[in-house]
Length: 365
Ligand code: SF4
Ligand code: SF4
Image (cartoon, rainbow, N blue to C red):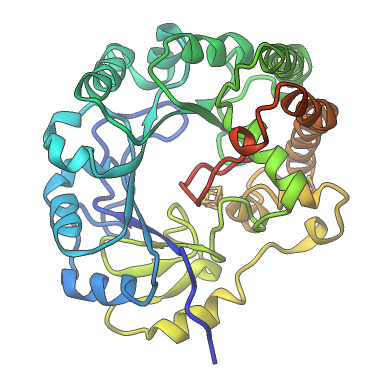
């Protein structure tokens, strides 16, 4: 018998369309594979989600707010924890009544205005920070997360610090633009001259602030500390294990971006039973070298899609692993110190316990 999953994260792609054309992504999905709006009956989605006693629904796209009506319909008819990953530029498509019910809002912003607009187009930074300010003004009580995509023009130390200093976001998370993008000029040089020293400085900053009793919500640091402490899902985003995606055409997939990969297809709304989908999930996990890697506890295989697709080839994957190991080592080096500080300050470990549920931050950049 297949037991009901608890707290399965359902990515609901309201559309494959996006209103931006960011450098690392290029905009919308091909419409023939990821339609502009759901082509299935909402009752089928409800039926699937209600198999779970504590579901989490993440609105995703494309840009999910292009189909704000779908978000309203889902939130009006399905009981779940709700969150959204959005570029924030269309935030007024949804009324405050819906926003305040989101447990987490992940706003795409890459750091300073120069960095953000450099990747996402002029004026994007201004619109996203306006959205974040509006949520704060309305008294949003959920988790407001800055979600960065990190690529060659990013200075990880100053871009993360900039977002922290805005004092708008509860948490800052980033994901490296690696493995599929071919826009890098010199990835190795960026890692050795910019990213890795930046990670060291950021860890130093974080631990110094901890000594002053301030816990900054840097998601990769908190999340990797938690994995080192408790273990966690492989992959850390939960793709195919405790997270699935429903495309607008009703396809159920292990990962929201794997719209055309055979291994990621778990079924279709209205055609595949819940238990059949669960059975298929057993066959789509992390494969290969990750299983015997000494870093598996902290890393979790990083990204299922990359683990399976390997667009940068074996050599490219090794480079990504190296930078991942560097990051995990930097955090491991302050592991004991962080708990000792919390102890000395009498703060307990609660403030380091993040995320409390799969809120779609992938933990490992
Ligand atoms: S470091 Fe590389 S090989 Fe090791 S678990 Fe992570 S992704 Fe897999
Ligand atoms: S981290 Fe990788 S596997 Fe996980 S949801 Fe993102 S692209 Fe998919």
